[in-house]
Image (cartoon, rainbow, N blue to C red):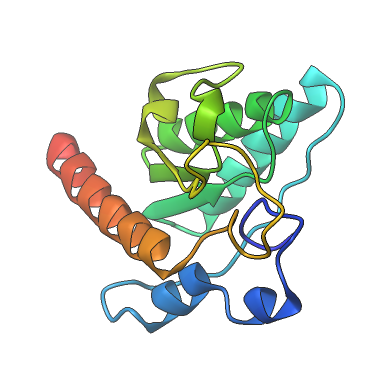
Length: 159
């Protein structure tokens, strides 16, 4: 799927993802890479993959995470849980998600307040236009600024 949720992404987008390009070239960021987490069917497994991903990030001594999801509805369970598991480990985390007219998560927690919407459709729906339902350069800049600000605020709370 790539970093964004659109099934209409081109292979060019996969190889030149704006978020990956921005993070890997920012001198303030020690870009560690991309973690791909599946979306299991059962709630027990949904919570397990969130805990494992967060433990992996903690083991890597990660300070900040930009998490994105490629779905909605039942996938919100995984996403919200993973954000919470990461945050519980005192790792700053923000999210990226195509929200649009849905405007609500199926499940919410205090970490879903830090999810940025990258909908570009006036109607707030996924369109059939190639590349319109995915992260662009502006979204990437917003995500980078958001995680840097969140890391700074979270660091001040810990002190």
